[in-house]
Amino acid sequence: MRIGLFVTCVNDLLFPETGKAVVRVLERLGHRVEFPAAQTCCGQMHANSGYRDEAMPLVHRFIETFRDYDAVVAPSGSCVAMVRDTYPRLVPESADVARRTYELSELLVDVLGVVDVGARFPHRVTYHPTCHGLRMLRLGARPVMLLAAVRDLELVALPGVEECCGFGGTFALKNTAVSTAMLADKCAAIRATGAEYVLAADNSCLTHIGGGLSRQGAPVRALHYAEILAGGDE
Image (cartoon, rainbow, N blue to C red):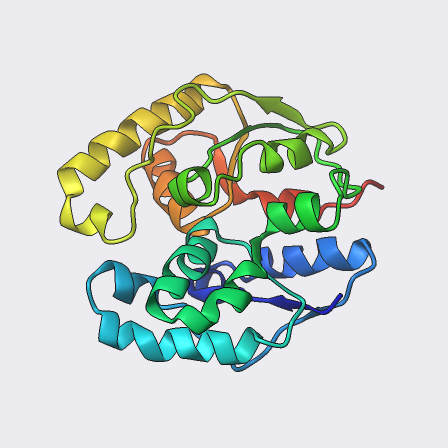
């Protein structure tokens, strides 16, 4: 299987270790992952903010860059949701590429049939299912299944697990007071678990959550779950 990595803007610029983690996991399972250098932004921010015309060149660029891959994987529920849900409505001929674009847990569990990726992480963690992954991709238990198979990892349920963290892209900028209140509730729930780490499938939301926890002086680190799966079971 020829797999293309769509690393996304946030990960490429701010969290490169997450992209590297995806590659390590898939290579450990015997797959070759390619990183097409022609990739750019998926256009999610433009489209969600009403700038459809500005988004279209980015949509066409994605289609052209990834059209020849058997599967496209991205460590971002929101960007994959953009490709799978919005692209076919903007550009009908993108439907084939959209169908072959997966969030990491979908590729591992549904396509490759793998739950145990051979990872070890001896820490107490909790998992926050971000909104796009939860409501648009319907990732369900896939990320939790993968984490539950990690050696020595203690996975603790998060109270109010389906509640938004308040990020929502530009929502956090345009509706600061509401976003801050939602973040406060999410941080309180995370701290109540006693977890050392809060994990999620989107580094954008984790940046929001991690910032809130840091300002509170909470000893909880926000981390993409791919980086947990990339840890070896030595």
